[in-house]
Length: 334
Image (cartoon, rainbow, N blue to C red; front, top):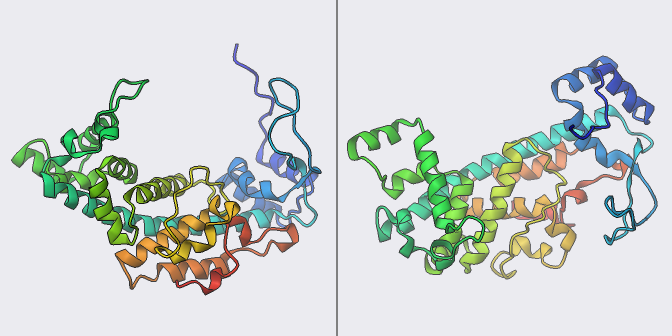
């Protein structure tokens, strides 16, 4: 027998009534019902979660042992909302987050395309089918075996690569298969690699090849740049899957170069909270964009969105610092 899920199904009207019973003001019920039907209670709950009242500082119980948890004391969320919470507050925050995700994807698309060129150009200089040659990669990628699968990371990557080639319906892939057969030259194959595939392959390149690419972006250490690509791939996945971004906790944080290499990231070196929020990743993206397209208006569009698009939620003690902005963010070189 499956374990019972304790929460019952609710109609849209019941969902709205539940929110109102917990202290959320709804000025236009028909419009609120429309949002619940089109966006969904569960998705919107990620935005009104920050509006919920909290307990005093306490140590929660471990759900397994029923003893005090070893985690740091925290304020647990209650079901009730802070005074002044409205349904429209949640919708406004959702709309801001949607615009932020779309703007972020716009930049990451350009970063991804530039990386395809960078990686395929450096590898292609060695050999046109370089991605198949384990000896052209770092031993940790091409020799060391995973204890669970018995495969190298290169073997696993090749499986992903083969799947992308097989699934592709692009005319240029079909043309190259028919005219030249397989394998495809690296500068052709790279056009079907997604951000994750690029990030993984870069992480397996030799240090000299990594450095050749990272230095073009003003970062001397290619291993540091590999951590950037891993974090930006995470950022891309959050945006592509329509997940909440604005105040997300970034667990796998990238390494930071010395401040003199990336002055735009200086504010994050000594602030763990800011390093764990998405604004730092957006500043990293802007650093790359200024190399890829120095005349791009992306940074200014981001600045405008933060200044004009973030809803007024001061009555709920919510401001842009929740996404990790530094005090001088408006004066950055956008």
